[in-house]
Image (cartoon, rainbow, N blue to C red):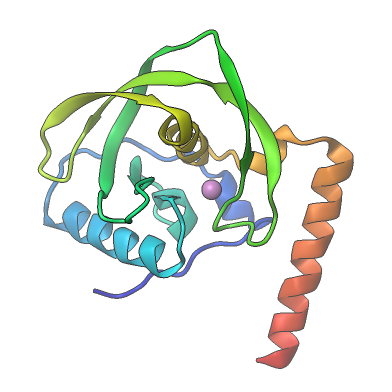
Length: 171
Ligand code: NI
């Protein structure tokens, strides 16, 4: 299984809105497996297809301590969210080494299809709830830094551009 290249903010492709998966077939299962491998290799807790430049509604996650409980969400939809919110420090594989606080619903209920194409419902809380909301934002073209102030976002954008110029120079 090949690892996929993760797009880095401020790549404009990160703002693409993903379309629903029409059928969970071999192609989608391969995508899911490659995304899981990429996420584990990068030591992330979640990865949306948008981040690997595939614009279909597919998310992989693993918020377990032991990193042995992969969760696959195809065509996820949030059907309920708590009024109660939490503020947690978030990071993103597309914005490496940047962490900041974002307010999210404390609990969400979602419906999705799994890797086998079967539908299921999930009640998520704490880190899993935060991660679901963060990854679902990716599918509509939203990166977590867009919740921050314009000042912080501009600073992050410059830092990321500077870093990629330095990497290109070293390459
Ligand atoms: Ni992310």
